[in-house]
Length: 236
Image (cartoon, rainbow, N blue to C red):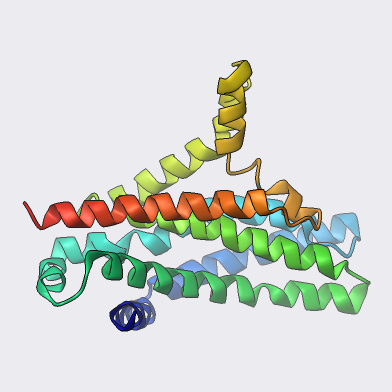
């Protein structure tokens, strides 16, 4: 675990040494802030439910930008081979990089807590729904980051990694609609695999363990495949 935390700390530092984290966070806050102001002006409701729906769409686009460099950049520069020859396990490398991206995600979402403060000043928001909404948002983002890390392990090109992550994320988002044309077991499987299907309850203040397990499972599977992808590089 010590190696994992060391890698996570090094990766987190590299996020903020380069402009990538600042740019992604700034874009995320600008878009969500604008939408928050517009939605609040229109609805006059002390709730973040509407903005949460928009935030997941934005996360679909910015999460791959956070994850694309995690392995692809080191593959391009040749430093990843040096990391693999050091006394660390492959899963420690993958997990350490993933934890760093989660920390950036937590900072990014934490900064939007200002919206909740504004609602508290203007009205009486439902704190249970706000808390579960943020939990759902973090779980949703953690699944997307794991997918982004997986695609980052496939290539040396960050743009390709980000594009592949967006495509996979969008596929899991719309798979329920695609499965609507099917019937029986296939339709049920498509509905269960949908990222959006497991998100709505969080916005209603409902924390269902099935939804939590789903997002954790998506992240775990993506990380497992990323470890296998990293392992394969040792034999190239």
